[in-house]
Length: 314
Image (cartoon, rainbow, N blue to C red; front, side):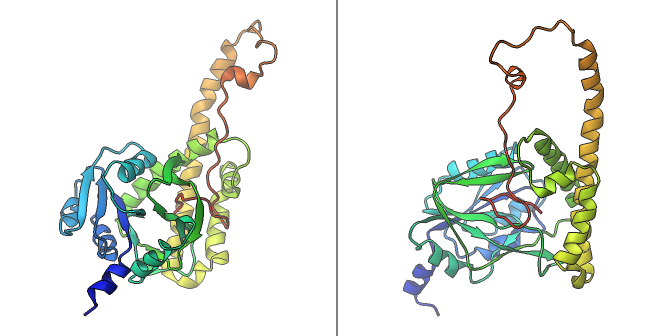
């Protein structure tokens, strides 16, 4: 039996925080992975499956419910308005699974001087087994309470950290086992949000976004990149399943992008036809963009190779 003093030393001052909506296929594994925590916060978006019943089986779980608006607002509510008392927050999606050594790694990381946040790398699982490589990026999951806040980027959120960021020495598993229908529904929604985000962005775009704006090239490049560069071709049916998932998302994005352009083209032509040749010029010193109230550029985090502060791309 482990001595109580040793147990206290290995239990970091960390509160795992998890967002849920109909996560009965995943939540029990995620909660079991952080069962060592004294306090776990679950913020649920009014699930109608067994999610709340599963959370209720764990005595160290506190459940809050809030209507979902954006990922960033939901996360900010979870870390700021649920009475978290610990020094650190461990932000987990409901399909993240922490390995048994995570408790010791968090205890080590939270004692590391000068760091206020930590990136985690991921193993992407298909049919419950991890792939050798994937497109899933590292992002900040552990941060000191009060030193990080979420902002919305595309279909997901990005954690903005005030301070120096380190990297955890162990990996989390991304192990989503929701049915195909739920996955397709979510990906179609995400693709539409990403298309709007790319359309609004100005200035430098990520490589994947430049491909997406062609309307057709991204699915081909992503399929070849996953199969050959990430070597998922060697993973058998699991590798092909992942490659098809990623390619399908890019196809959905292309459809959303083309639909967006097609729907807006008639409105643009009508506006052009209605514009008078005698329309007043902008005041001296004011550009046409300023007259239209052009938005400042907002750049999403990088997808391939480089890592930003948080964010999520499946």
